[in-house]
Length: 74
Image (cartoon, rainbow, N blue to C red; front, top):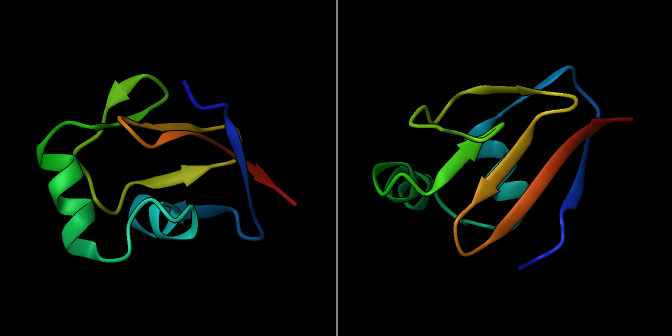
C-alpha cells in the first residue's frame, strides 16, 4: 500500500479534478470521469462522484490503485 502523499495548496479550496491532475493521478478530465464512474475515488472515506467537488485543508482523497493524498494549506 502506498504511503499518504501531502498535497499543498495555496488557495482555500481546490476542485477534485484539479487535485487529481496536480497529484499526477490523471492527465485529462476524461480519466477523472472514468475513475468517478468506477467508484474508485473516496473523499474522507466516502465514495465521491462529483468531478468538481471542492476540497479543503485536511481533506483526504484516496484513489484505488493510485494512492492517498492529504490536502494541506501553505
